[in-house]
Image 1 (tube, rainbow, N blue to C red):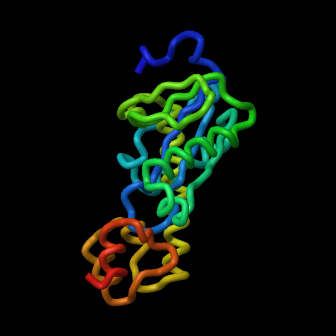
Image 2 (cartoon, helix red, strand yellow; image 1 turned 30 degrees about the vertical axis):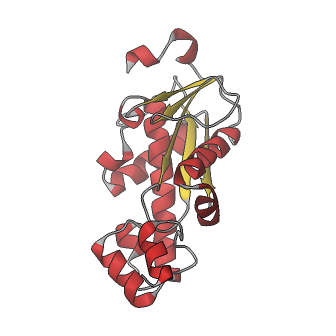
Length: 199
């Protein structure tokens, strides 16, 4: 991790970016960008998938309180179907960074791809477990999206969104077959596409 924090980028000008929700069959893809305050470090930041839901909520509250800047953005189900999930994820990350005030001097992005933008930046493989600012973004995005899927549970009862968060579990696929496709399902994703085609 230390090698990533070049002297010019170790301060308040560094943003970390991550997204969640590339794999699910339903819901938006959500991205977050965070500029941490070096004077107010947050202990315990790591890949959101390796934290309990309760711990993510606790850390998300600390990030919102202590970070110099944070932003959450998304690409909609319609945009996912129009662009494809990779491009929609990059778009969500671009929007998240654009939402930061102040704007960052340098951006570290989780993964191996960068959005098309003018920011000085680099991708970091497994960045959500190596770079605190990316871990913070991962946590904010995960908490945001999980909350939205819990809300979809109320809107579309019977699909189990609160449990599987839109991922293609056996229970979700069974609900799709029995209850049909909702407006929040991604029609370009193979299991949904197959159902719609009657195959």
